[in-house]
Length: 300
Image (tube, rainbow, N blue to C red):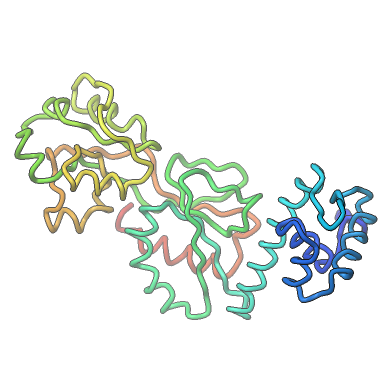
C-alpha cells in the first residue's frame, strides 16, 4: 500500500531552485541573476516555500539574508536532492534508452582491473552507459543512486544480492634494490624490513606471519588507504607491501616490483558484485552482471 505525501511537503522544483541558489549565494539578487529571474520573483518563491513548510528559512536584515538554523539544515538536504535530479536528467539525456548503470567500485580494483576491460563490455553493449563512483567503505544503496557495487569482504550485505567474482592471492612485494639490501631468504627475514600496510587490511601482515609460523610483530612502516599508493611506495624502496598479484602483474613483469620472498597467501575475503534486490532485473545491470561473472570465471 502506497502512502501519498501531502502536497505541501512536495514544493515545486522552481521554488526549491530559488531557495537553494539564495542559500548558496547568500543573496536574493545573486540568486536572481543565476536563475535569470527578477529579485522580487525569487523573494516570492521563497515566501511560498516558507508558507508551505510553515517555517522561517531566512532572517532578513535590510538588503541581506542569512539562513536560520532550520534553513541551513534544509538547504543541505535540498542541495543533495537537486543534484540527484540533475544527475538523473543528465544521464537520461545522454542515453534516452535508459541504459545507464551506476556502479560503485573499489579504487585500485576499478582502475587496475575493471577499467581496462570495460571497453570489451561497452563494445558488446553499445546502448549502455556506465558511471563509476569510488569508495573505500561500504556503499549505502539507500542513500546513493547506485545500481550495484564491487565489494571485497565476506559474503554478507544486508538487503542485497551478491555474485562471487574472484579470490585474491597476495605476495610480499618490494623494489629490487630493497631485496638486494635485505637479502630475504625466509619469512622471518621480513621482520627486519619496513612493512607497508593498508588501512583496510589491518590484519594482513599478522595473518601472513602466522601462516608461515613466524611470530608477528607490529608493522613498522607507512600505512596507506589504497593498494595503488602502497605499490608506488614499494617501488620507491620504502618497504615491503602485501599486494594482490592480479593488481600488480605489469609491475612484476617489468621488475619494478619483485617478490621479496615467494611465499604467497590467499586472502580469506573475496570480491563480489553486490546489488539491491529491487534492481536485480534492471537490464543494464543484468547485462553487466552476466558479462562480469563470465570474465572472472577463470579466477574463481
